[in-house]
Length: 69
Image 1 (tube, rainbow, N blue to C red):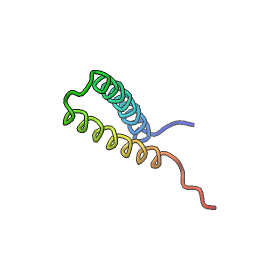
Image 2 (image 1 turned 135 degrees about the vertical axis):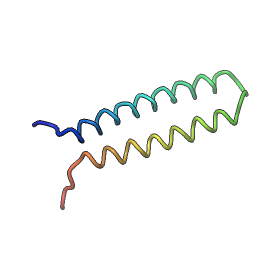
Image 3 (image 1 turned 180 degrees about the vertical axis):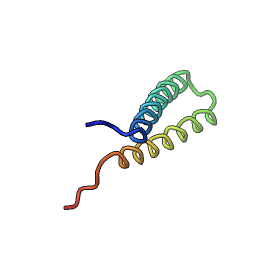
């Protein structure tokens, strides 16, 4: 199966978002392990991670064909 350019572009973007999500996960863990530090920064990172999760879910849904039950 040959991917068209749009699908290829979506898959590349999806992988970039997944990598950013993993990086944020590690940053959140490191910040939390550092002790009671910058709660505002921690909250911002968690919010960004949730936004990324939503974007990833939407892109994955776009790539999967609709299945009619």
